[in-house]
Image (cartoon, rainbow, N blue to C red; front, side, top):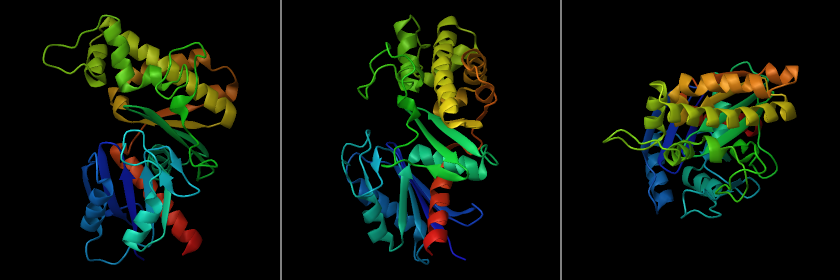
Length: 304
């Protein structure tokens, strides 16, 4: 039947794969994201994956945002060489195939709904907790993208209107409390020191929390409470029934998920909010590519 091309673009990594209709990846490759000439690197990656085979039926692209669906442009915060970059048209021209674009966290949510922890959910919130915090909603099997393509930016929901200023210009954003760098930042400000020879990052902090060290434990409890407030608020607004959490910080496991469960019990009131299931990712780093492939297959089915 042919295959679609899935592309995942982030600040540190470019990934691409040819994907069958059942979600199986036939060929895939990754490479680091360069600071400049990103499109040249992406073209090389696409050439490596597609090779001299037939053109893909369609291309699905997940990219760090903000994005603009109307004109197919992207302006990733951590990729300064792309501002208003016409990514969708560039990929369409490069591959000769129809292309569809969404945010990388939206693709994460769609991938988990298709092949991962979100299967069977009628209303899913996917959250990526990493250097930043991103999110995506899948309602009745379809991604909720919003008018400009930026729906699901849950990392910049305000959970404390009197809280800390966020890099986005807002105040009290979830990301300021629960992203990896901000977990470590708060811990360092409150007396934590990484063991000699180890980086003062979220992974090292999680190891300290797993050993029961008070400041790392408190940092994860603080971050988990911020996530719980955001999840409860999203559930109240959209009535999501399941939440899937991925990203590097989710690898902390019980250090994150146990205080998150406790915090949700405390902040959630209404029965339908309390009923939300929270699960870790099962696809991991493959989720965004799976979601991009799903975008492409849906687009091909609608237009092919």
